[in-house]
Length: 420
Image (cartoon, rainbow, N blue to C red):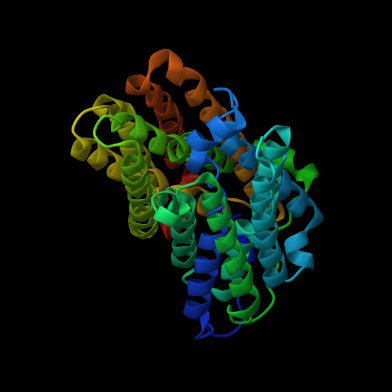
């Protein structure tokens, strides 16, 4: 089964194109800029809460709406086979442009209301043809060294997700309108890069097909499902950490800086912990997994990130340096294993089930992230910042258990050329 799965993703004709690294650079930059709209509203939660009169239960949906739209968009795209029908350049470019438009449209809703959350969901739907298509596009460029290339792409996703936190600290963009407009402008730049800068891909690439009638067979494939369960535990933690760490830092450091300075300090710290540390983690995780094994790498990364979820709250209103150290380790480890779960599925699944397995993995993972984002928002007023982020450690605990079970199976020898 592993040979069939790998064949589906590793077909490439002839020698690697010499311009592939330039293509990877520009695709990654374009993805990074487009993804910046994902957390653009979350980065200015305080201002939007006052402007739109949001209740405590509504605030988490500034991010959760994007997750929900992303899942819906990805399922529609996969079901219709858009990535196989439309050139990656066209699909990714106009996805980025659509995300820019739906983000800019928020500026026309000074009172917020349900329309704001609809626009956030539409932003997610547009991004569903940005990141997944970028992965497929890069795969077409890299018949070899595909793991490294996708790791670079995930590093770009991480920086893009953190970029709005940095925009908040810029003097010209401190108002919520400026941050949203700035993120939308970056997505427009992404549109232009994809259409006119990224080199033409060397040949056709046909992504694995998603079919609803094959989901049952995926659910019965135990090795694949252990890898999926590991990913779902990872996703329980990842997006909730990216959503709530900046709010935690703001609350923890509120007494140490005046409000205007605090926004810049906390925003910059969040960008470093989520974006820069995450980039290093994504690259290191891929390197470790290829050399020492996927289950080892994922178990190790989730062990560290779960521990950071348990202890970060204990640094609340303590020395900022201590809090930042824990945040850096958490940001590094929480993303280090991200690419390995989908890679494991490509190594364990048959070609006939691969598209359905990958789509199921992603859809359930993002839906779970909505639950963890909302749960933290609901619990924080009750238990406080000292304890609330501990609930995220449940995800890595489940993920470690799942990957340990996979490791004990004979099929795990199919991972990373025998490096399980």
